[in-house]
Length: 169
Image (cartoon, rainbow, N blue to C red):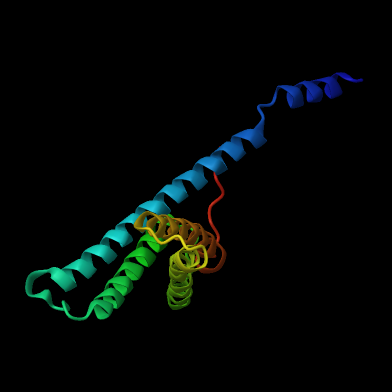
């Protein structure tokens, strides 16, 4: 082995491990992204519930006699808040220039995922016969959890499909 070969071998052996550092940076970036996603979802939840209650029971009870209309309006507002938050904060590096397409697919995913808690409740209540308030709430929370995971994956896969920046070590 020549002196230059030995020098090269020593540099390779003494080089810091790059792959674990990149992997850790990628995991950190994903954790921050998920935290931002959940924060935006929490704000959208407050907008949905708050606006619904304001329209139904707030000053003047604007839609006090129309709960479904109030719910539709609050869901639309919450979806727009969620889309803007996810577009400009959670997935800001992956957003595309096709805003209308993004919003349409985003809304479609939200509609589909909104049905999941309804389905888990129906399964629990009518198929399994678990009819207590606790069972209904557990089934709903499970459905919301599954829907949240599917929303995140759907947004990553079909909505925010622009090129993101690679994490740095």
